[in-house]
Length: 451
Image (cartoon, rainbow, N blue to C red; front, side, top):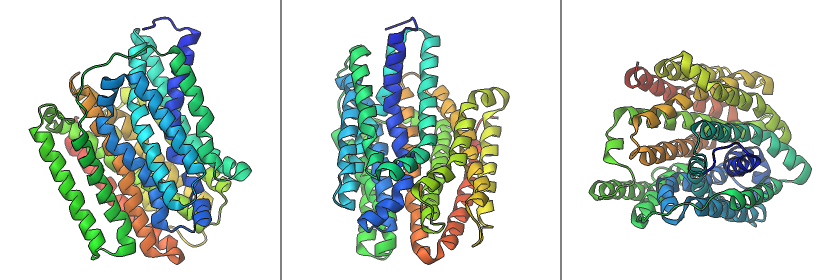
């Protein structure tokens, strides 16, 4: 462990942050390439949903067991392995011959992301012995993720314009290799613990989340009365029930009963799910709307996202000060109302609206979710004991990722139902549904969060 803030410490911190940047960048950079992918692969809305959701789905479901792998094989090894998997999958994405190949490669990217994100934070905690230095490194880690999320659409637009759609995946290769080089150079060898890897539980949760997402995403294509949709839904629910039953009987469950029994933690988890559902679902729909309805290029769409993403990052960066000035219940409640107003403005959209009219509602959506998330995350970690921290973190991270998956699936289904000729009607339907979600978020904030 290191105490002094040396050049080596800075290079190590940068290496770890670059790993997190990869994950956050791929969350947003692909959105501006959706129309290009749609034309290149002759894909439909459901196909584009899978480009986003296979990544998020594998990311979410594997987060529950990623901490165990770090304990078993060493955090540094898992971090480097995650980046190498991410790089390999990115190359496969860039040279995908079909939309189905691309979907599978995106899923493998999600596997890499699930390995490297929890281990990146653990690496920082292991490396820095000094509390102040550790806090500074973690703050830089969080800031780098916010910056990558904000820069993703613009960077994607420029890359597609200059180098084509393949470049939004190829950019991951040099960034990832740089992270691997400095991590291996400066990160200490991590301790290992004899933790049992729960293959059955992990398989069940992947099946459960995957089948439920499939049923939602493909119901627009096959219909809700289709055998494919109904069997997928039932099989997903069965897998989820078996996972829960196995967790209850396990002597060493992934999700500790004390975490699941903590009402404040569960309230924070539900709010995290709802925030990501409305935010990432909206980002997906705006990506489709900008390029299909308003006929923007990838670069123009990326620039159109800039005010929203900058507003999101600005509020995130201000979260520490806001948390000291206001109570969490108030911040989360105001955040839900700000998002509610943002979606409410979308109900007023008309045929003659352009990009500029959408800036205000988009900025409100970004600000609303950012007001709540940092405080909710702090609440969860403050409620969890040292023994519960890993379980609570995994549950919260998984819920947030699955919120994004559900947002893309549900909102995408609404857009598909409205058809390409009535995207404005579809956007209004999405806005009305999202307003309902924000009201649930408001109710939980007012009744469940501490005053």
